[in-house]
Amino acid sequence: MPRAVIAHEFGPPETYRLEEYDPGAPGPGQVRVAIKAAGISFVDVLTARGEYQFKPPLPFIPGSEYAGIVEAVGEGVTHLQPGDRVFGSSLGGTFAEAGLFRADNVSKVPAGMDLAAAAVFPVNYQTAWHALVDRARARAGETLLVLGAAGGTGYAAVEVGKHLGLRVIASASSPEKRAAALAGGADAVVETGASDWRDQVKAANGGKDIDIVFDPVGGDATDLAFRTLGYDGRHLVIGFPAGLTALKTNLPLLKCASLVGVQMRGHALNRPDEAAANQKLVAALAGEGKFHPAIAARYLIEDYARAMTEAFSGKLAGRVVLVMD
Image (cartoon, rainbow, N blue to C red; front, side):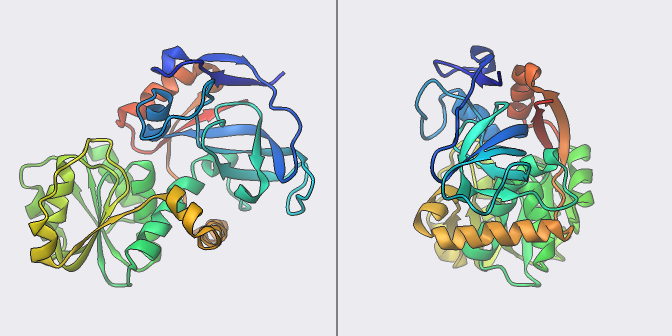
């Protein structure tokens, strides 16, 4: 019987257990997937701990991204069939060897992409695309400053930004992370936390102000990064694992700059057609070899607690993947 990482109360990774779990047959509009790999993000672990902004029902199987093989399709599903290599996202249920998912949220894996890479592809790259294209309305030639540039969404923003014709300045805390950002195509890197960080950013952009900030970090970094913006600058709020910040409202006024929220769930709920189009476009670009998710570590499902702890630490340059086989 398939297994899953399950808990009957929220808590740290040690709260969870690997138990037998069979999701059953797919219903109308559903697909059953034999999950082969699942991405582990900071938010996944935060949710598993019961500390995220919404709490899912218990018992709970963590995880929001996966890739695998279609085992069966439900009534009305015509774009998928058993044997297809697929990937998708879900609000929980992916740290498992099998799962049921809405078929309209499942896509075929681009040719040439392995399942581990596919498992960490959709959420990060769709978020980066939505942020830069829909929310920031980025224009070729503008400058993009990416915070947390070696993290999942940060690294995706580097690659998406370069594809859109932006000049990308990547901020990361360690030499390994800065090297990863450069490998992803960043034009320049700066050291997160350095006392002269703003001077580094200024120098990296030839003394000019920044057009767009991609911020999946929060905390003290938000205020500092917002101050680098110029006229009509856009600061994209992706997340805040470093904590909330109290940005002074005189800054947007004086700079004529905008603070812009980015939330994939809100986008899918309010503009589902646009979100679906983004999903197809980003997958097509990946199939053309435009995007390459960075994987830092792979763990077997039996080692889920260590994998979750590693992902939560934020120390790695790239994503953590849970492998089922």
